[in-house]
Image (cartoon, rainbow over all chains, first blue to last red; front, side, top):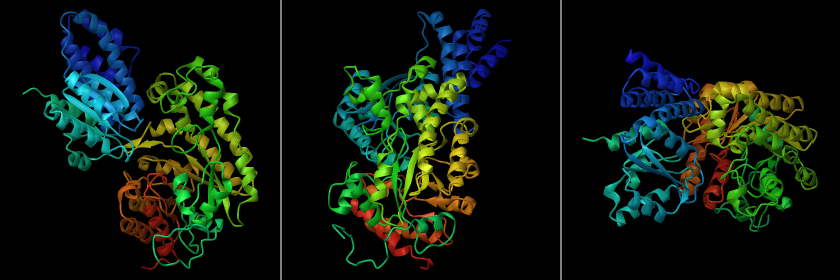
Length: 214
Length: 370
């Protein structure tokens, strides 16, 4: 019976049934299913499926966003029940678009997917000064820093951030992942980033890899 | 010719007199005298360097001089709510937002308050109803009238329009648009319709102008990984508008070109079916133009594919080699025009732009034989 409830919740998230999810989660909780199980084995697990489907081209951004919204709605039902025993986020991620670049569609998609996967994400915004990024890394001490650029002219800012982190003695404290239309794995390696994600699904996989607790 | 700067020592004996028939032949898969040069946007600093004097938005005669002397058979002129490239102060929609919506606001001079790059204006049905659509529909055709007196014989105007998809999502904010497409589809459909009606209003006027040879729709439909929304959603909400535009163009003997960045492979059959005559730029960051030519080359003309990153950071010899290769592989039999992988922005090295141009003129003479 537990599996039936978890399957229904998972399906609802995958199919974006945002009008049904709250009742489904309430029912599951009423039946005594552990809230951590609902979160990890249904809600977050569903977002893994969504990410995979998006990466395979089976669904597109609108479907992915509605799934993420559905997941969040389900989570909101559970949150009051977690008082005092909040599930620890998988990790903390800082996200931002580099200096001179205003594009944020990709960044915002990644943020939604990371949150759906159980990460705590802080959005630094767009057109970020190198100094601001370094300041926030020093203050927040994230596990991962994600940088986005859409213009070839702003890509070099990514290296400036990495170099500045190095200069401040912070480079080894944070994993850096990069993405955006003109960016590729070769560029990421060249500038000393820890990883490159071609889309939101890959960014989530990278974040998971970087935050795996041994 | 005033101020022409060449990067090489030799003069070309090729005729660069504009002739729209050259472009027509290439698009119709015939071989003209040479492979046409084709861009939807060359930013003013590049035009200025070419002519050796300042070219700006208000200097139409100089713009015509650039496009003619650089070797193009047309001049692209935007009509519609948004210019290609960034949403600037000059875009009609920005003027509407500033002069109507934010007229009495203290923020009116702050770019972050009026630019659709930073902010969206239609969250819901109420915002849609109250948006100043009538003001947005007041489009400026003055350049189309003014240009008649300065256009050289043989040269035509290509009217740059479109942005039905882009304008809709920018007005709504991308995430809101994407989710609304599923949760509140009627709202999104209504916004698409309003935007399309304004753009159609422009089209009706343009189609009656004998000096206009084509409509070039600029509307980014895809990311590097594929379409921004499902192909079915595009078929439901966007392609019918462009099909109708293409039909009306063809009835008047005009071509219908399309520009979209990103990976369009999942949409190629749709684009050809709706009536696109030529497609630009076959984004070199994510599309293999040789594969596109092999699969679709006999059904659609291809334009562009010289990478913008090469124009920014490459050397002239590399640009020359790229153009030569593209001509060799794509131009025999017509169906290809030389151009950039997006547009020619101000940050492209001028010497690389000139290398692109000169390689097209040097290697593009028919029959292609090297």
